[in-house]
Amino acid sequence: MAKPKDQRPHLIVVEDEAFQRETLIEFLGGNHYRASGVESGAALRKLVEKDPPALVLLDLRLSGDEDGFALARFLRERSRKTGIIMLTASGDTIDQVVGLETGADDYVAKPYDPRALLARIKAVLRRAGGAEAATTGERVRMGKCLLDLQSRRLVTLSGEEISLRAGEYELLRLFAENPNRPLSRDWLLETTSHREMEAFDRAIDIRILRIRRKIEVDPARPTSIRTVRSAGYMFVPPED
Image (cartoon, rainbow, N blue to C red; front, side, top):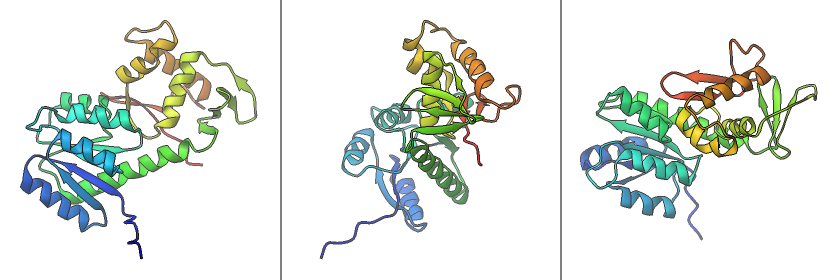
């Protein structure tokens, strides 16, 4: 008889200090996660191909050729759904911002309280699940509107169509695919600027302003497309 597949979420710990790596793996295993550990970027790349993770706990300063920033980019390019939490001894705000811009979902400074880390892990996994749920249907609720991903149309809840520029649709699609996840201005600009001739620093802010006027109940107090200080913008789906 075949051994039943382990249904626990798979978490990978990327840490080049063996004691810290093994301690965290043991802690995660004791809290109902299936945890694996690697010490380098090369080992991580091999493992994710063999056994894709739900979330990666990524040490920022590794002793090998690749640091946590490079590995975060690799993970995010491979999948938008994989959760990424950076673990580092650095409390530098610049590192936090760069970490978010490279695709990390959260940033935890060492030393950390294991219970607080566990809460962060659960929150990121919930958001990753929300990202999958948000794109399973053809329509995504955004503020007072619905975005139809198949027809590329934005309509009000009463069915009135709202015109969209190509760059505005691309932004809304990215937000719909990444709910509750901070998206940096630079990443949004690089991902969508080829659609329109607006590739300058404030182009994203201008598009966000236009979008808010179309989807928010009160554009002056946005609740759907929110500003994340020092990071960028985040789409928060309505609770109702």
